[in-house]
Length: 198
Image 1: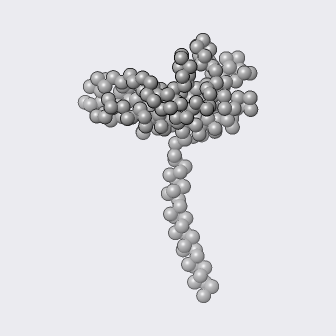
Image 2 (image 1 turned 45 degrees about the vertical axis):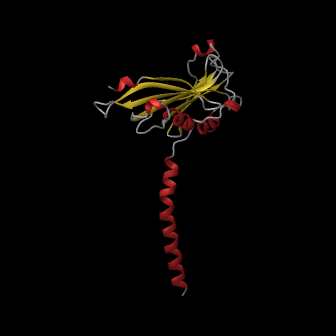
Image 3 (image 1 turned 120 degrees about the horizontal axis):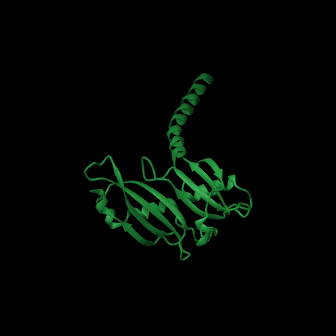
């Protein structure tokens, strides 16, 4: 009797483990959003720098619409150009450095973003950009994002979009960008050039 119970328990445990593995794998491959990367980046910078974000940007996404390579730039009073940058790849920290940000100081690009006004995350910015009516008939293949302060002080996402070419769908082309307010999610500006897909 004891052996039958032990065998039943082992079979049940094995079945549960096999069911849980795909769920764990899908959770591990989930791309982190910009806000999650800011929180993660705080682990790699000094206490005087934490949460003092001046910019979040990504490289062009590969194999989907969510970028894999991200840069979180923090305001650092101890750096000569007042910036510290943490680079992430697939949610893992790749590099920490003090970048050259000379031009940003001329128009307030080195002032930390108000975290209370950062309400729209990167995934929501992509979703908003994709709702633009001009994109309805296009196959969007990639995005890149940048969140920082505009010249008028507004904090905004700029979502750059790539679409498949009509004559050669294996190639994509930069068709422009959509600028989205990071506080309320409203589209501030649309600069889409659908004629580039010809």
